Length: 318
Image 1 (cartoon, one colour):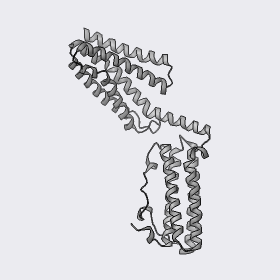
Image 2 (image 1 turned 90 degrees about the horizontal axis):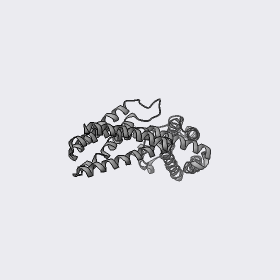
Image 3 (image 1 turned 135 degrees about the vertical axis):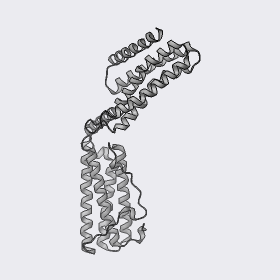
């Protein structure tokens, strides 16, 4: 890597052209990543891409006048002092807040580069252009930091927040809720059947643990293999599978843990109370994120849980 202080004016201009080209492509990737779900933010980044393209055009014109047609390839990773950038533009789905912070950091770094480069050059025309670009990058920096106020009116922000909430529901809440319901409800029958049949807390605990872990693995793979998320917008399949599998296991283990209590009757009553708590949590999640009315959610969850619980009791008592 070469020190910045060792760069010639020709190399400084070549580096500036490379930086503007990289920023232009990054903003293009940001715009493409937000195109479907956040069109207003995508439009803002498209505008920033066009401005970076104009900066690059000015730099290339000046380079041609001063040094000819050949522009040496000098990249940011070839010069000491630049910060390594996270590859946010390769991540899908893009996170708005992370991208806004990265855009602000990009503009700060580019602005400082132009200020430092302008201070080192002796050519008046080169220094003038670098000073002008530093001032423009300063306005970009302010815009990136105040993006909410400058580019996103209240109704657009509301639309984007709604879209972000929808994505969170699709990618996290739905698979997590499906897992929690399956783990909490489906494992009731084997756990309480084993408990009543054996009258031993430890046996009931082992059955519940096996059922919970097994159900978690099964539900995780089922969710991950259901679709790849490309058409449904449900996100990466293995992330959904991990969320669904983990919540399935948690839902089953919740009412299994009380059977670590040696006193069987105490463990049985404690497990019953945990079940009520689990069903209450599921009802709240359905009301909070799925917009299901309280009464409807409670009846649906309670009826399913009651039927499975009765099944386990009848089988275990037979």
